[in-house]
Amino acid sequence: MMGSDSDILVRSIISRGEDSVQRGSMRTLLRGAWLNDEVINYFLKNCFAGRKEKVCEKEPRRKPSHFFNSYFMQTLFDLKNNNLNLRGIYNYNHVRRWSRKVIMPGNIFNLKYIFYPINHDNVHWTLAVIFMEAKKIQYYDSLGSTDLVKMQELLEYVKDEYKAKHDGEDMYATEWELVSCKRNIP
Image (cartoon, rainbow, N blue to C red):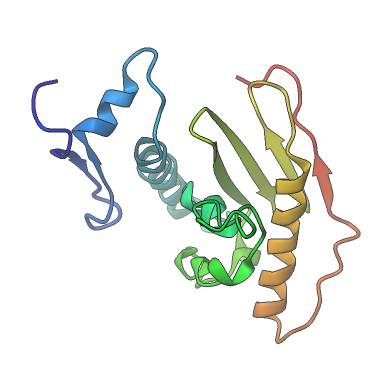
């Protein structure tokens, strides 16, 4: 792949050009390279999200899903903060406006599934999924581990969103289930 790492090779049709993939990011698809956020986010938005919209058009009663990008978890936990005392701490205020991009006018409670790709220190990818109707959060990791803290904090996020969308009313989360990673996750 000849050319500058900053050359844009792919631009999204779905998001009106907001998303693109640069040549340097495409190089992360080579064997032995670490997939970066740009590639993961582009794939989720343009492959899965695009398919999701087509399915919902064909089946109007079907609830849609939403794919947050990998920066959601980084922002929710302030993972880029230079202050080590604040890094890794849950902060709903950092992401409270992110639900505005959800397909059903800014309300995650009208969704069937919410997907959260998680970048672990640029060495490993995992996925958390919230099953809104089933009231469960499940963790997927090819190494078989489960980050219970992230799952608990995602439940906290759901509670905070509920409070924001229901005039300060608290959501009772006793019926919610946190499901650890199952075996044989690819």
